[in-house]
Length: 118
Length: 109
Image (cartoon, rainbow over all chains, first blue to last red):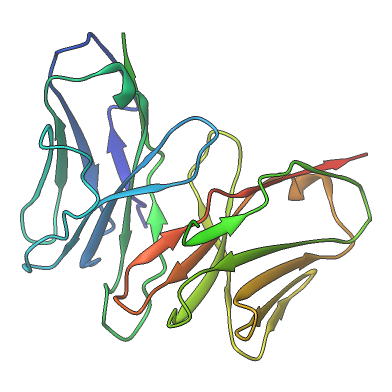
């Protein structure tokens, strides 16, 4: 079956512009995660969606970052007024189950969106 | 102190050798532990879960030491294809997943 997909795969933008990144999770996966990974660094948690519950936004670095997800489908991560420090790979992952639930919460990752802010 | 710490490496190991690396975690209430593998410029993929009793999958063995708060990954008879970054992941008492920065492994012929 189809895995997690993300678009665009690469995005180059100018400082101050807004960007929107898209994630299509695996069908039937209730949990969706966004991470940021700077070059040579580990994964930095951004936001987590679980079904129709309120998202865990504790990892969003500033109010320039926001994300939405409708039900258990597509999610978009929006970065407003981009800064050079936002340059990174943005990874989306989904899992069949989420926090505090039994069952598998193995995360399956998309290929990421490489964002470059000039 | 970081919640999850790993030696960044790189570990340069000849093909066929055995290599092991650890990951330490700070929250003693952490509940679950995992090793993910990330190839260069690729997304992470689950390698194995780490159970209290330890577990083995082919050439890979994972161990948990709760008393000293670390998990380990042992790779026997290393292959060139094992070259990757190995990420340690810890699920804390709030069920959040905390990721280590990874240990880079390079297997040389």
